[in-house]
Image 1: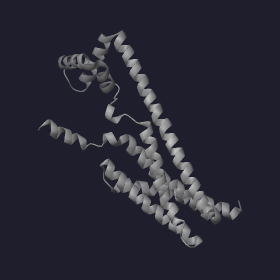
Image 2: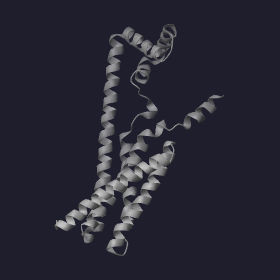
Image 3: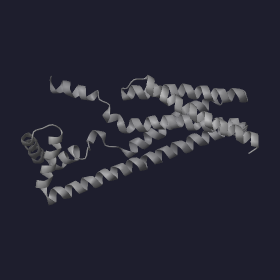
Image 4: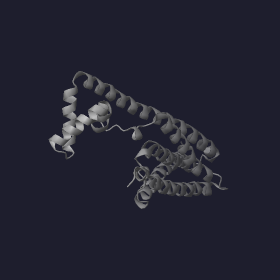
Length: 235
């Protein structure tokens, strides 16, 4: 097998998608469920004059919240990784021998003999000791490094796209039709989200799709019940 073939096979892995894929799937699912739940709650409460306004406000606020939340969360993760990087640099500068032995023990635990593990550790230290410890001791890899701005943009866009699906259902002609139109549009969106996320992740379609649809349905059901209670009590 040539190096080109190895490179092509590595491209088939999905690990490099983990950062933005998680944010995009979460954003789309939240956009669908939260917007649908909000609009269904408003419809169940009999506040149909505010239905479209609630939908627009929910999509806008949710997209901004998701973007900021993802950025802060992922940036905090990067801060932790950078702190570990600086600490590892200090350890290597203060006691490189102990760090070499630590790396040897890591390779021994992975199945190498003590002699071979020491040879590998020495070669790794000669090439790039810091990179070896970040990778093999701390599990930090460049291709899986979280990217705050990318995650924030993916979340905002996917939330908006997801939220527009139940919002489109609110244009049905009658009040009752609006309610069920939102529900059906949302279920269709959840179905698409589940299938697309499973395809992108390279996993089986059935289980992730069912999980997404059941979670979204439960969210809509609970919110509709609360909206109905608010309508009956005159809130």
